[in-house]
Image (cartoon, rainbow, N blue to C red; front, side, top):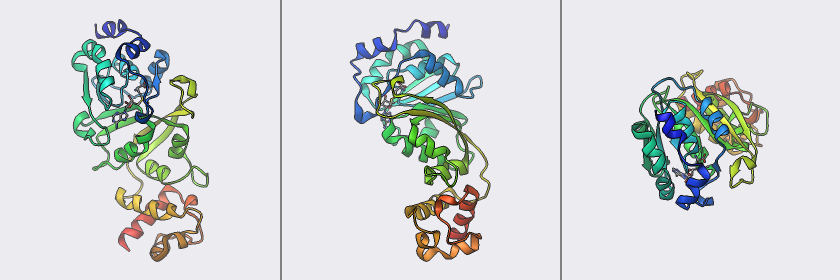
Length: 276
Ligand code: SAM
């Protein structure tokens, strides 16, 4: 019944035209209009019957439609009032399975809006993608309120999230993400997949929360990576300055550089810094 209603909605291009939803760069608006591609992304979300998906930035609603068709209940937060207006047809077709909230995702309490056990799925506005991810990774307690996160980033950010030690992309984001989640790039997309096409390629990353390898507070790890990667080209001895004594406690050679440390070694260093 709902699926039939969703199938009879006008094409996304028509929704955009009727609502005057011309893409605005400062809102990171690069829309996905290919329904097959949107279905593929929605199917990456490990949904079980009755699950909720928290979506940031539904825009004209392509991914939202695909998630609803896949059986999800969707809580969607959108900052642009023009998009909220454009989504009225979808809201009517979806009924109580879609909750639309006008607001800034950086300022809202996603855990309270989506509820425990929700999934996160979004074609993120690129200018705030990393900040949103950091917030979701910093959730306490852990495991967090979200069960999975399936997120479109610009490719360079996606590669930083999944990077391994000793590679140029490896940094704070890699360590913090991989400390708390299992990460994988699930899909790569060329600029032409979007309307308008951005300058860069994109990729969908999936993050699945795991129990951390060591009982280190996230804030301590965030501080350790900030110190160590703050001067990435220096040896850890120099990068840590007065705190370099923690390296011996953690059993890490002070002549190494931050980018060579594994996530487990960072956890040890964070523990030593926090207790030292
Ligand atoms: N989901 C749609 C799609 O795939 O076609 C739109 C994705 S577009 C990359 C990003 C969306 O996020 C836009 O609709 C934009 O208005 C919205 N947005 C930008 N900043 C936001 C914020 N701070 N909070 C919530 N939504 C935001």
